[in-house]
Amino acid sequence: MGNEAIARGIIEAGTKVVTGYPGTPSSEVIMALQRYSSHLVDMYVEWAVNERVAFEVAYGVAITGLRAMATMKAPGLNVASDPVLSAAYSGVDGGLVVLVADDPGPHTTQTEQDSRWYAKLAKLPMISPSSPQEAKDYTKIAFDLSEELSLPVILRTTTRVNHAVGDVVLGEVRRLNREPRFTKNPPRFVRAGMKWNLERHKWLDDQLARVEIAAEKYDLNKVEGSGDVCVVTEGVAYNYVKEIAVERGLNARIVKLGLLYPLPARFLTKTLAGCKEIIVVEELDPYLEEGLKALLFEMGLNAPVRGKLTGHTPLEGELNKHIVERALGVHAKATELPQVQVPPRPPPLCPGCPHRFSFLALKIAISRRRLKLSDVPIIGDIGCYALSVYPPIDMLWTEHSMGASISMAAGIKIAGFKEPVVAVIGDSTFYHAGIPSLIEAVNKKVNLLVLILDNGVVAMTGHQSTPAWKVSETGREVKSIPIEDVVRAIGPDNVVVVDPYNFDEMIGILEDMLSKPGVNVVIARHPCALLEVRTQGAALRYYVEKDLCRGCKACLASTGCPAIFMEAGKAVIIEEDCNGCGICARFCAFKAIKPVKVVE
Image (cartoon, rainbow, N blue to C red; front, side, top):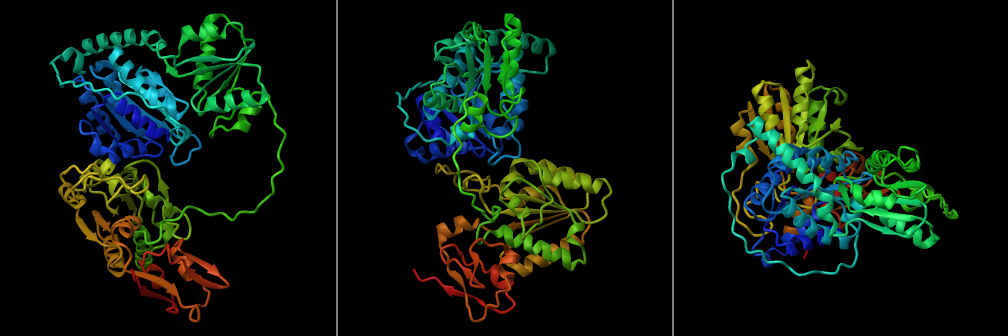
């Protein structure tokens, strides 16, 4: 896949350090490297606590003359943006590449953020591959460009490139054998001096002016075909254009850009000369479209530019072949497809997920306090537990950004909200961005219940490590930092650690905490069910005794467990999916759901 190709490019480039924070669609880059870490003895490959820290670690490596990469998905660049912009002024001595993976669609991201604007904001070069082969090759090019220009370089991908599969021709692995060196240079590295900042800004602009010429030798920008209609494209969108051109004999000049910032003005001035019409095919914002219009104005050309701003392609969502066909004025014969009614199927929490126990316990605790669920805001965060927004659990009111649950909940109480407010945050999200929010709530003495769901892993993105681990994925011994130690050091009024599988205890603790003033923290700790079954197996499975089942659907309607379905008016548990948690049996009034020992 594209991410594995990037990992190979990292190896071929002689990279010393790779770090980042998990986030689809970027996660598999580090995961691929970690799988082969025993063979990469000269490379440090570890997850960081968040994207800002990841970038700063990588930047620290790069200013010593060695090569480093920081990986992240699009919102992660928001987190890292402060040091990224400062690093642009200071520059690097070794190669530094920032991989940012955008998510048109979106498939797994809270916004369709277009990270191309960050290159313009930070004044940093950005290149964008369109295939797994280019993903590998551009990774190496990004490191070379970074060292030649003494600037961090942004490698921008999108989901379809990250997860595309294709043949990749491998290259030679470079052995740089460099020793880290760092010399004191305050005018360059200290951003507290305003005169120095002005000088470094001028230096940055001078470096930026060199980018296009420096990049020309890498053949990042290409022209295919001929004609007075020009199609300007980049990234995965190029593949749609290319496929249509081959299939339909499109008479057009296809201009494929690999360098996205700065836009290659010299190349485009030469390439677009003689074009009577320009069609821009790109995903997300009209970034190229706006840039081309400005460039054409400077060139004195009045060729019309078609794209997102003219309605030829949509401003939202990812592209596909049919959308691009319409934009190019090529209409394929419509295929009659049968109309199939598919029932809606929202994504559920996994069978045995401890978060299901936590939310159901919270729901019961709220009702026991004689409160209405509609009166108690449950402020959520980023993670698997966001799936609790869907019926039948139907608990979350918000899910905004990493770490926002605690601070948003605090804001609701500060505003004067009378009823209890509950902030729900996962363990990895708490380490990532929840700690400052908890400090704020405790410092301001806000009345708040914080429920930390600790399943011991970054589950939603592929079961990556958290700071609580004692050994990382590469086998490196690391210092375990338990969540309760961090929480108690901050000083909330009450801290309780409980296993949500102990359901009655969990309900009682939540009921008690809902009534107490101050900041009260409940850490619900139980391993991710998927990992628990894989590593330990299931001691029990549950089955439905059909003679006792009344078909009331309480087991399914209460828990939403995907291991349960109805057949011939009776509940059925899929044996292979059941992990033996037993939550369904709790809600069966007829005692029809029974355990059976698993025989290996």
